[in-house]
Structure formats: C-alpha cells, structure tokens
Image (cartoon, rainbow, N blue to C red; front, side, top):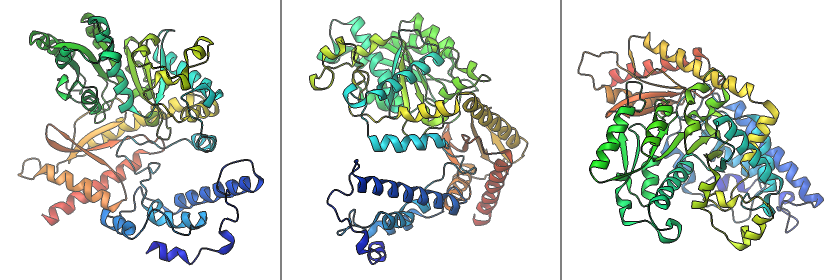
Length: 508
C-alpha cells in the first residue's frame, strides 16, 4: 500500500544518472549528493521534533504490523531519498519512542547530547573500525585517552586498562570471563584458552545480589558455567547486598563442595538504582581470594558528580568494572566500557592473528586494540564521548546527574505525600519504585490494577512509565534520566496514573 502510495512520486530527474552515485567518496557530484542527503535527513528529524508532543503516538502493535504487511524490503525500481524519508515517517518516525520527552520516565534511556550527534555524522561517514591501528590511526588514541580518563575517575592504579564495548551485557560478560579464567589459571595446571574448562568448573560459583542484572545469569550460561552457578544473595531494606549474607553464602557453598570464584557488586540496580556496599564487598572478596567485579552500567555516571561520587566508594578496589556511557553520560547507544585494574588480565582473551595484530607490530609499540575486545570489527563509538567532553567538559554533565537525582528524591517524597501510593525505595540514583493502591483494605487485585495502568498509559502515549515485579507483585517504576524534566511534569504523570487507575475501577 505504501509502495503504491509513493511510487507515482518518483521523478525521472531523481533517478541515479551514474552507477556510483550512492557511494561516499570525493567525486564532486557524490559530495553534493551526500550533503543534500544529510540536510534532508536533518530536516526529517526536525519535523519529527516539531510534530510530536508526546513520548509515544499510541499506535497499537497491530496497526504498525499492518503497515508492513504488504511491503517488501526493497523497492524494485528504487526511490529518491526524500521519498524514502517521507515513507519512513509513517513506518517509523511517527511512532518512535521519544526518549527526550519530559513525560518519558520508563526505562534506562537517556536524552542525548547534541555534540554526540555531530560525532555520529563523522563516525558513520568515515566508518573507522577500531580493531587495528591501520584501520583507525588517530581514533585509537582518542579511545585510549578516554579509557585513561575513565580509569582515573574510577581510581584504578596506573597499570589498569579498558576497552569500549557495545553495552553492559557485553562488559559484564568480559568481567565474568576474566574472573573464570583468572581462577583457572591460578588454580589448575591448564590454560583455559587452549584446554577449555576443568571438570570442576561445574562447581564454580558467582555471587551477586538478588536484584542484580539478568545478564550475569545469561553470561554464566554462555561461559559454560550454567545459570545455576550464580548464587543470589539477600538484600537489605535499601535493596543493597547484605554483606553478612554474602559471607554466609560463600561459606555455605564451600561446605557443599562448590568453588567460589567471583563476587559481583551492583552500582545501580535496574529496578531500584540501589548501590551495593562496594567497599565492604571488596574486603569479603579479598578475604576469600575471589574476583570482584562491579556492574556500574547505571551508576557509573556518578563519577561525574562531586556531590554523589562517594556513593561509588570501593569501585577502585574491584578487579573489573562496567560503565555504560549511554545511560548516565547522555550518549547515544551504543557506548559502553569495560575496565580492569591490571592490564595483564587481558592475556586471558588475547589472540594473535597475523593479518590483524602481528607480534612484530606490538613489539614496535603499535597499539593493539583488538586483543582487549571480544569483538573484532568495532565501531568508533568513543568519538561521541570525546566530542562531548571537549565541547562541554564534565562540570555540566555532573550537574545533569545531580539534577536527575534531586528530581527522583523530590518525586519519591511527592508520591509518599499522596495517600493512594506505596513507595518501595528511597532513590540512590534516579529510580522510584511504587504502586497505586487507593483501597488498601479491600480485596482489590492491586497487581492487575497497576498492570492495567502501565499498559493503558502506553496505549494512550501521553506519558510512558515502566513496571516490574517485586516478590511476585506488580509495581510501577519511574526511571528519571532527563535533567529537563521538572517536578511539575512528574505531578502530571502521577495525575495520569490516578486517572487510569480510576478508569480501571469503572471497567471492573
């Protein structure tokens, strides 16, 4: 249907006159076409900003599916870019979730910095691959400088190192991979990279809080240890790991004949934004001689804040750490980092391929980035953070962090002052978990009520919130990552929640 709608608009003058018109290169006509295309695309984005006032259009999955039901991926005769962009409005832009909207308070999606969009233009056009020096040149040193900057912010020693990754799941995998192979290399007479896992690997155990990220279990399975190797440790009333329970769990697993190899602290749980007692956990890990990894994918941005960075105390004692720049550094996805306190740990995954990173090149002092990554071809995502820091510095970014934390605290207080709400947590970062319960002493199905509210708000599109389950019960969640959002926005969102909650009782 859409193909038929736009096919008649294809003008003869817009058809490519030259076979290589679409390639990015230095031919005058191609440069002109590139500039025109970028301008048209920017205009399409600006039009999207000007025509969308809500975080979502409210379109149903069936409505969107119907638009694609009669489309093929390619147009047999081709179209001008302008026509494709017009079509894209209906297929994507009109219904795209607007993370920059002040009424979007659902998941860990931040608004992004304009300087990063300038960087994205360069990243895509030049198309640098970060796996080798002869494909990246200056890009390598930009990434190295940013790794050095982050390591300094974490407080790691001079011998530390790191690499940019696709996100927290990949970074957490690297942490567990190094933990596994470090333990094997120090306790067995085998090389895990060459010989695989010892038979005792079925007894390896990794300890994390019961509210830690799902990627730990997923990665344990991918690493051949199995999800059952991950031991969930109880949390306190602030949803932080209970270090006494951690030690008890380690002792219990040892008594069962199992083998503790790692403990994972979370600095910013997905649901609550809670931060484990990292300093105390580091002491436990040291006592039992096991790896200490910190998942600071969410909370890593606190290193920018003079007011709140003390909440990360103890991360400098970890063996490895995850930080997502695309969460609290306001970067576009993907932009993340994995960091280790000792660069020699990377030997557990290093592999020499003569066509990429020959030993001779390394002996010449040529930087070898691919040895640090589980990816080979890797995008130059570091440029986004580089342009941000060179344009803005860190003080303003730190203020953004302070603003969203203050908003979360004020929002939590506002909910507590409304009699119809139950609030579970006091925000350490910017997540607020709560539920709407106007009739607490009745037989109202509170889980069904709150599930209805979340879904009906998404279907309406005026404000987007998230939901989660705590001890099997449905709760609503705000994740506040937009420093432009004000308390008045949050009050409007809560008013929407109450309105949809009232509608639930009318329908039921």
